[in-house]
Length: 179
Image (cartoon, rainbow, N blue to C red; front, side, top):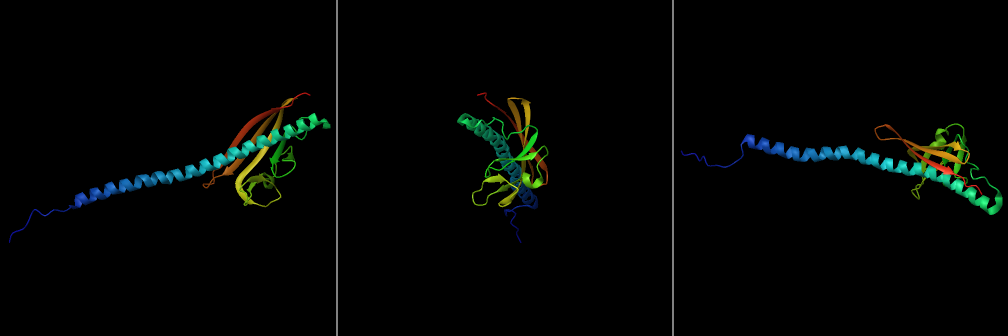
């Protein structure tokens, strides 16, 4: 009986090497994807927080501008009317006035909570309820620098999916114009 030694096939060692290479080719990209998902969620949350903090600054500027227009129209309104130093504010773009004073203490948790209007997708801050409660909270602190200038600090807080607390703050300045 004659055996044919020219048969071709894979040895056990060749098969193990091929499986190892295949595992490396599949596992490496999967681990990269697994690490990038939380980072992209943080980037999304951070972008939302930056916009919410900037909105806090802009709400104070809008109040100052409105006061100055009223003064120029003859109502004798001080440029900083309703913009009290050493005071905390919530911001609700849907309400008049947009700045909601919390007095000399940080606003309560209900007032700080940012909600999202399900119909429009817009964010707002109101203790009146409605909308979808988000993970974000915000307050604005105004301090006086000199009689004609105020500092605005807008803070946004949130917890990520790992329950890690994050804080973002933006600082701006406003000044009045003597008429």
